[in-house]
Image: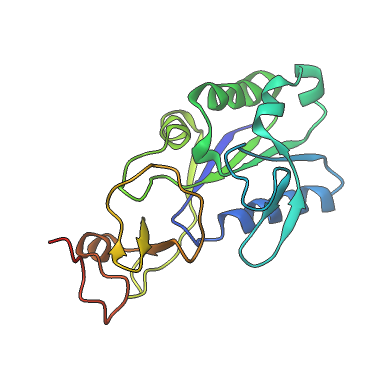
Length: 195
């Protein structure tokens, strides 16, 4: 029986690399996997999924999946979607339709929360309806499990702004809750300068 999976983790936890490896594993076994991402993620081009370690593959957009017919979708053994946090609620519900009515597993990879510890729309919906939730773990600079995505600049941690700002290691860092709340980007960082 097919399931709707949500693989979530903080920035730098290898979510995209895991998505690309999952697609590779299906393909290696002679199965047909459809690789997609949300349209907001344009950092590496509209139709490219690229991990920080350099793995990359062509993909389609989640919008295109939502426009496909049931017959087209049933031709796949799995659907894998990266950057799922940027999906709309209706898109997540459509992915659930693929699982429930077409018996095609859907593997979603993305962030659970933003830089203010608020849920993204797509992540919130998946947390509510996914069949399986799996954390992709990474660590803070202190060695504890990192669960927070800190946006930062030369002045320290950024606490306000738009929810979506595309970036990578030069804009975000994964921190444990303690160091996120203290605003400490490293062991020698004095902490939140806004207190």
